[in-house]
Image 1 (spheres, one colour):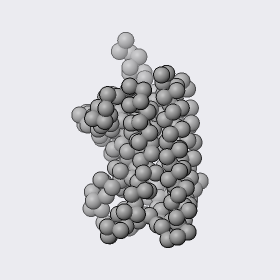
Image 2 (tube, rainbow, N blue to C red; image 1 turned 60 degrees about the horizontal axis):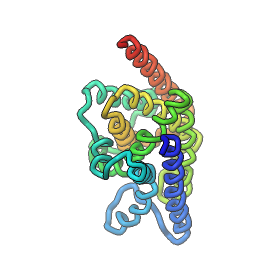
Image 3 (cartoon, rainbow, N blue to C red; image 1 turned 90 degrees about the horizontal axis):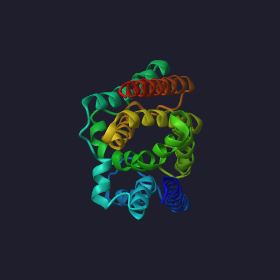
Length: 266
């Protein structure tokens, strides 16, 4: 099986799972179904399980397709790959710096400095945001974006996956209980953010060696955990354009410097 066919299989299975489950949740919304951002009861936890399946669709598709095509021997090997955390401290600092830069620019441009939630909620929500968010990268950055990068280069692959990612996120705006469905997130500003973050994930992947998938998972998880602390970050165009433009620029510069450094080693 060629990598191209694996990429197609992954994308099709991801959307099949995502749209099937999210479509059912949207329909169930007419009968009282709702997602719960903060779980306070066993019932609310249970109601979030099907939503988690939708969000985990890239990870689920990743394992199924890679196992089917003998790219991984089993679940343990797949887990070892996506959670390889023995990475240079500089890579962790790069991820943290990217997050800090994004939020600081947003705050500086929008003029919003108050914290909506206490900072400790960041740590409390890490595990939940790993499952509802971070593990997406076990698909996007294990299979899809790296393969497109080989064929189209860093910039185009980032844009293409950004568009695919936008399409994958669309059901969120119709599922009751999500920030997207409740009107707290502007779709077009969110779309700009998604494309910019594909650039940053692409840069992380380029420079991270064996731990590249995990570092992308970490960035996604930490971003989702940090976002609620500062409130909705995608509600002003000035902040959205400034923060995401800088993220794209930093990503491109990082990749250019890395590629130049790599070429001088040979």
